[in-house]
Image 1 (cartoon, rainbow, N blue to C red):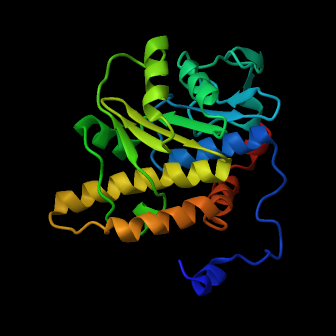
Image 2 (cartoon, helix red, strand yellow):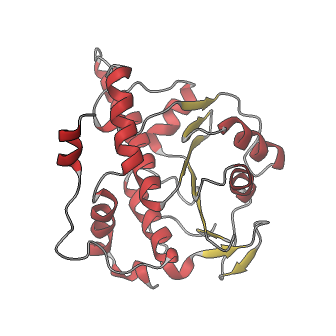
Amino acid sequence: MNDELMKQLAPVTPKRPLLPPLTSHAELALLCRVLFKEGYSDHIAGHISYLQDDGTMLVNPWELAWDELTADDILRLDQGGNVIEGGWNVTPAINLHTEIHDRRPDVKVIIHNHARYGTVWANAGRVPPVYDQTSAQVSGELKLMDEYNATVNEASEGARCAAMLGDAKWALLANHGVLVVAKSISQAYLRAATLEWRCRTAFEVEALGGGKPVPANVAEPLGEMIDSNGFPFLWEAMARRVLREDSDILTG
């Protein structure tokens, strides 16, 4: 990427705050709400963990759909996945998160859900091609875990998924759903949204017929630049969208 283009992409300081001050609980609630609109909407399925500096994890509760929870609903768990703060239950599949966090100290956010189009490709056992610029916003291999042995709440399956993920950013889980990891809330949003966009666009292109994927030597540098540096202002804009609809997300 040439220096002139990098200068053009360097963001200026906004004239006013893009978001109000957010607690970690509010950040996680907002991420759930925003991703629901992106297709992460399989009823009450799905869970996100957000690792905190003290080693505890924040997690969305099992009982609530992603489009209804607020900051006050978020649970705090100890390193063993036990609830130590909050009035709801934690998903039985929390072992998937503890296994990945144990293996990946670089990972702060883990997303698992049955995203609409991501799950279609997972069920087909295929990795969707990159057909457009937005689909190329994240670089690196999209892992395909092509065997379904049990639900991820089984200890052995959670450990197997964590091991197979390795140092990858994301994966399709055969006959199940998707898995995304990141170092921050904003990066988690970018990766999860890009994955579902890529899966939906590839489905639509291939349903229409024809189409030419973006060459890897073009897609990879683009994805590396955007994913490493962040897409300026994107997360904040999507978070504001849901806050305009329901400002109670920040409290409860």
